Image (cartoon, rainbow, N blue to C red):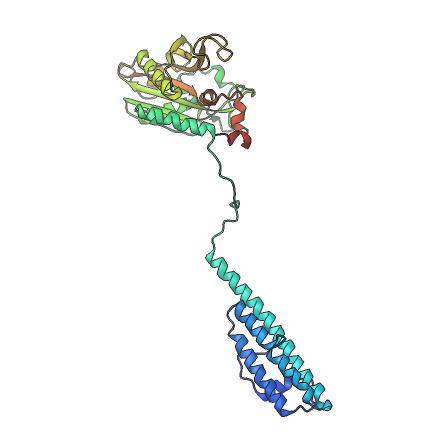
Amino acid sequence: MRLDLTAPLTWSDWHTTMSTNEPVPSSFIESLHALREKAFASLEVCQNEADLESHFYAFLGKKGSITLLLKGLKDLDPETRRSAGQQAHQLRQELDSLHQAKRSALKQSALQEHIKQQRFDALRPLNAPRGSLHPVSIIQAEVEDIFSRMGFAIMDGPEVESDANNFERLNFSADHPARDMQDTIWTQDGNLMRTHTSCVQVRSMQVLTPPFRIIAPGRVFRYEETDASHENTFHQVEGMMIGENISVANLIHIMKSFLSTFFERELAVRLRPGYFPFVEPGFELDASCLMCGGSGCQTCKQSGWIELLPCGLVHPNVLQLNGINPQRWNGFAFGLGLDRLVMLRYNIKDIRYFMSGNLRFLKQF
């Protein structure tokens, strides 16, 4: 039976809850009635688990009021003891049931209050170990800092590019091998995954007014098989300086200044002739071997030099295709292999580690 604890308690209410019509001594009924009202009223105002525990021991415990009342049954005559005992035990069972309901209600209320005060992101791992920067990110930030101190702006562009920005405006011929499916990853809509960050140079020439100097670090893509020195996804830093009367001497000075700062030692550099559609003349820049200092070792294949980057003076066609007057302006461009710089700095032998996601490798940095 469920009672309305807020309604006033009358003798007729109490009497109808009893399962017997046998007469019970009025003094026992009065005591039971008073105890019932007191127990229900004090249960209603319990606000927490501690209050409820105290209430339980006061009324239902071994030394509680109902237990003490039941001890008085021995003073009743045998004919009425059974009926009085049934009514007292019924009160105990009903109060115990209400106790359980009150306990559940208090727990639910405490849980809702706890939820209101807590902020919990179910998608965030608990006690997750702190991550670390990728070695490419570390070196890219260092390269950007060095060039920024030399007055170069940091430029960025999309990884999915048009054929015009990636090839045409860089003076690549229509039948250049780089346009083949074997070298470039093409999308279904005729665009491509950029094969170099030189396309950021193209975008820069279209929006900047000379003179300017920029670098463009970023991820690039090539359609080729991977091995210890080749990846289909890798990183470059392209650079360009446009101004008046720019010469190869300017190119050598900037490159030597950068390399000496980056490797924290003076490095000798040399230029070898090289062909690239977007520069004329074009060069391969070598630096004295970092491992042997030029005396010859396995790293430099006993030559004393390591190949670092392609570079050259910007081809007049490239300037004209991108809205810059080659009669007034000229400049140089270069392309650094960012992954190669990382491998040289940390003596890493396999470029495939960078894209492997191997935490044992990444936690070293």
